[in-house]
Image (cartoon, rainbow, N blue to C red; front, side):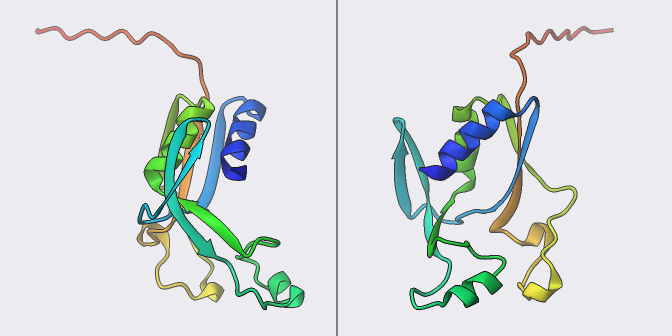
Length: 135
């Protein structure tokens, strides 16, 4: 799958951090298997089949050349980061995700449950030493 390979390519290209702003599926409706790993999500229709190239060009928040896209679930996205090699990944809530008002979506910021920002951190495995003592 292209999205999984894209994350793997980003891992190879960066020194420390990858930030992905994307949609997520709120329900695990479809299963994908890639490299022996299981991922879940849902297919989203970007625009009807009879949409003209001019209309597609004006739909700036839709795919430029795919009538459908696959939205992974949050857990699957975290697994994609991990399987690509990132040692740490998380969903970023600050700064809040802002959807331009002109797109007239119902909710912005953290209320936008299916539009999220994720961060993958590439670093070396290190030994963590802790001490817990009583004074």
